[in-house]
Image 1 (tube, one colour):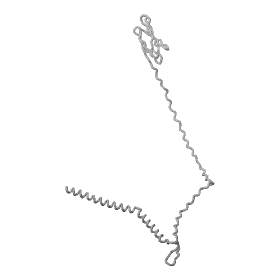
Image 2: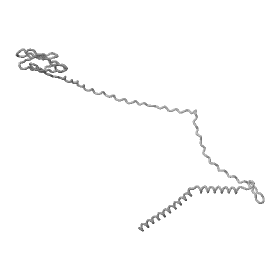
Image 3: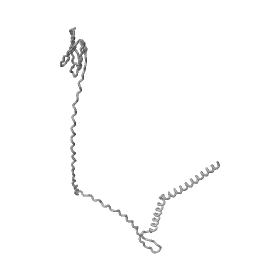
Image 4: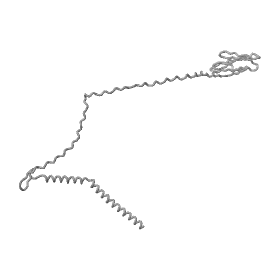
Amino acid sequence: MSRLHSALLGTIAWALVVLTCATGVWFVIDRVGRDVLSPAPVAREAREAREAQEAREARAAPTGVPGTAYRTGTPTTTSPAPSPTPPTPATSPTATPMTKPSGSATPSTPAPRHTTTVPAPVPAPVPPPPPSAPSPPPTSAPPASTSDAVAVTGGRVGATCTGGQISLGFATPESGWSFSVETESDQVGVHFLATSGNGETSVSARCVNGAPVFTTSETGD
């Protein structure tokens, strides 16, 4: 514990010594810098030189009547001291005035410029496209067909309408019956006849709105 205390005191004493030395050095440097940079010595020397010059002039000037020196005995006339010659001022270089061109000067005529026009290149003609192959004619869809059948006394009859045109699909007689077919432009007729007796059935078919429509009639027993 005593060693730590001694080391601490030594460190503090060393820091104080360093701080004191640094403060003194800084004060000396600041003082020297102020003496060097201060304009007082220059002004003092100029003032002393001016005072010495004035003293010399005062001693050289005579007392009493100007131009006469008085001594004990015979007066002696002295000539005044020559006045100092003022220094010759330095001559500045004389600037030569620039002469402006007179208004009567003839303006220079610019030389004519020759412009050469180069024609633009003519593009080569584009060949026409080869003729395309003719498109095949459109194929029309087959007309729609509608079929129907009817059963009557004596048999069955079926018909089909295709594009508004009637056609017989089938005619099937019953046992003991026969049939005959009659075809016209707008209808189809089927007649059933009984092989025994007087029975007869007629069936006709035509197209209405694209579909077969049947008409039947029966006679006999």
